Length: 300
Image 1: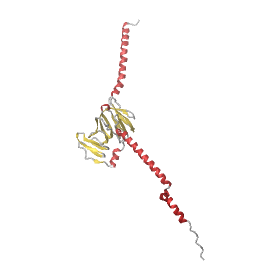
Image 2 (image 1 turned 60 degrees about the vertical axis):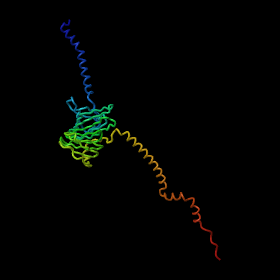
Image 3 (image 1 turned 90 degrees about the horizontal axis):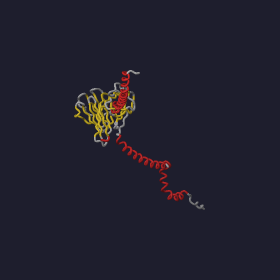
Image 4 (image 1 turned 135 degrees about the horizontal axis):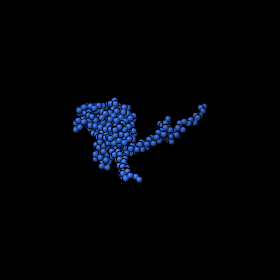
């Protein structure tokens, strides 16, 4: 027989077993739910070289790959001779150059409420931004911060280059952007297409200058290509483009017909035109003048 004490101990273990199993299942379920609860921002759509993602509550960096999802508060860093492109949920695109350090501090995209807000921080390196315009949205704020500057837009294409903790270069490629020193964000300047400014230390942004071709090459060196046309207008532009192509094709066809006729009589274009209008009226004339007259009677 089993002693009474051992039997009671066995009974207690059996009673605890279901609770232990339930506890393990709860932990197993909670872990993926915690990951799913993180707010999705976008994903890596293009990668050249290597990059790492630093994520909250994960001690080791994650090696980036094409398609990996990115979440709010992720930090993305590219290695030397590397480049990375991020596609955000709203259709905006971020392109990072080599040795760039980007913090995804804030992002909210609520299409049903017509709202978008974003704030990303560049600690070092180049970041080219295509901020989708989101026509019809009530709120579509989009900002990029650096150690010395704050750039605000609603929808445009621009580039930020953080050369050090005290030097930031900003250039506008399309539309316009507002640039201010991070220490005095209310004192901003406006950059329009192809204008460049420097923000050094605690100073206000420098007087905007027109970007040269050499400066453009230097700024875009090492960056992946990004669209220069807002996605929101692609449908309209495609339709217009199709209409233009059809018109052009029609004109080309007409021109081809004319060219074919002309080509057939290229060497006699002028002659053909003259012959066509005068043949019937000049033929008798030609026969009269070309035939010899009657012979003269012999003399004597």
